[in-house]
Image (cartoon, rainbow, N blue to C red; front, side, top):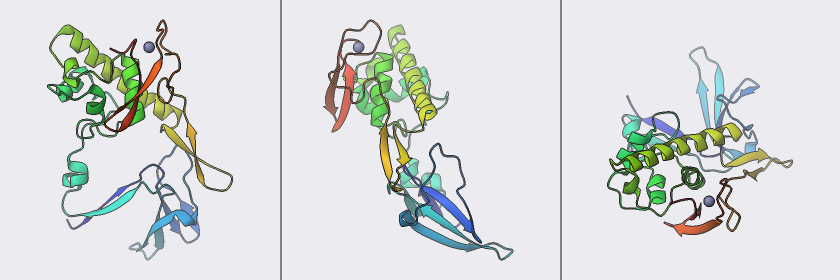
Amino acid sequence: DGPVLICHLGMSGSFRVETAGSSEVPGSFHQERSKIAAHDHVVFDVTSRKGVRSSIIFNDPRRFGFMLFAEGAPDTHPMLAGLGIEPTGNALDGPLLASLLKDRRSPLKTALLDQRLIAGLGNIYVSEALWRAGLSPLREAGTIAGSAKKAKGQSERLAEAIRSVIADAIAAGGSSLRDYVQADGSLGYFQHSFAVYDREGEPCQKPGCRGHVERIVQSGRSTFYCRTCQR
Ligand SMILES: [Zn+2]
C-alpha cells in the first residue's frame, strides 16, 4: 500500500549502505562499483526500529539510472507494464519467439529491438545473435514464425543464438561495453571483441564463409551483418 519507489541501476548505478562508519554495497556486480562521492546522487537517511541510523546512497557515474514514485502495484507502472519477456534463461525458445514475431512485417532486426516483445535485448546483441543464427536482419520478422519446418528451425536457431549471446556476454563481464575504473577514478570503456559488431569491411568469421561484414542503418541504429551467410 502507498507509493512505491521504482529504482533502475542503469549501466553503472549501485546503492551503498553506510552505518556508523561501515560501508557496504549490497548485490553482486562483475565490476567493482564506484564509491566516489561526486557520483552520489540521492541519499536516504533512515533509522531502524532499534534507533540505528544509516544512509542509503544511490551512486551512478554514468547517470543512466533513474528513480520514480509510483502509486499501486509497480508492475502496472507504464515504465514496466509494457515490457516483453526476458531474453535470459530457457523461457525464450523457438515456439515462444515465433509467437512474438508472428505476422510482423517489420525487419527482423527492428522487431528484436522492440522492448515490448523482448525486454533488454540491446543493439549489439541483436546483430551478434542474427549472425550466429545465419538470419538476415532485413528479412520480414514474420517469415521465421510460420508453421513450415524451415521456419520452425529458424526460430529455434535464433532463440538459441539469443540465449547464447547473452550467456557469453554475462560470462565475459555482464555487458557489451564494460566499465572499468581508471586511475583517476573515472569510468572508461572497454570494448569486447564481437563477431560482427563494429567490424565493417572485415572478413566474416563464420567457418567456410567468404563474405564480409557490412554496416547498414535500420531505424536509426547501426546493424552489422554478412549478406553471404545471413539469409
Ligand atoms: Zn558470412
